[in-house]
Image (cartoon, rainbow, N blue to C red; front, side, top):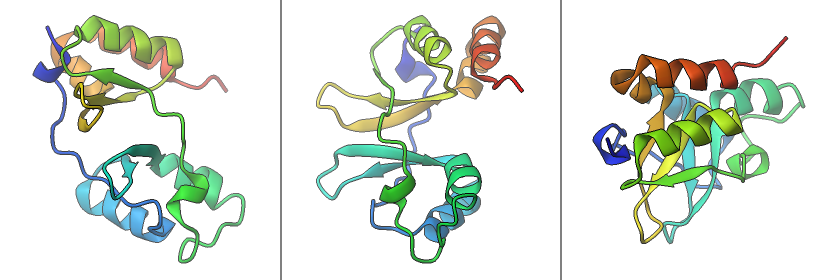
Length: 138
């Protein structure tokens, strides 16, 4: 099975100059936990998660009304290509201890996201392995 068969194709993004509050509001409205940060030219610059906002930005004293997303975003975004096999994506997610991947076409445009929830629709075994690897140890 290919990644394009399972990925979510409705990609909502945010500009790097948006505030943390705007990012949090957008995530709440859309009931999602992350947003890719895409430049005006369509380049993937990073990703911001609800965890970035709640744990890092707020804990470090960043003002949500004035701090721009680009200040706290994760710049290293792991990606895969839409025509790759789903097992390749699952292995990458497991190896990197992550729960989502940006999906690119061969022009390097973001065309979707693949989450561990998407994997669960295909294989509970794959999703379980990724979740186990991505769960922080306390």
